[in-house]
Length: 141
Image (tube, rainbow, N blue to C red; front, top):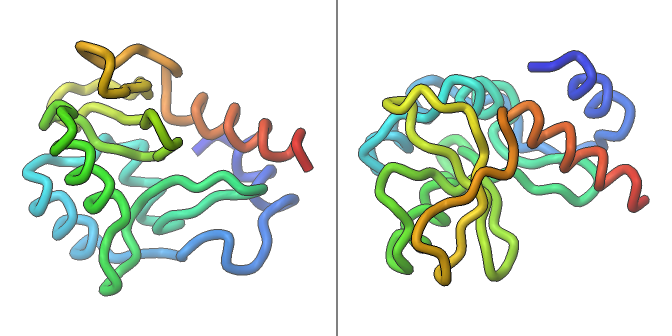
């Protein structure tokens, strides 16, 4: 993960902003339920943080034996037409931010809503997404 992101988390993170580290087994269970593998950058985030964010930003993920917000959101949006190869990493009311499964070797983050035929590129990498979203949260303090 980008050093700047780690510094943002260190400086602005508060207790319980993140779920905390989760096991590879919990991550694999979430992947199996969805029938795909998470992209490596997102998988690394989940392994270290589980889910959460700073300054009001909420990245979906895995919460150990409590379940997985990424699974619940992805399943809900699939019922609304989300491609089976996409993973929901953030819900924002009328749209979601999502990533393709690891099978596509694509680290970009997309926006998708029910009115679109397909996802549109929003960020070139997961790190770019975290940097922008965390900075927006910090700027709005």
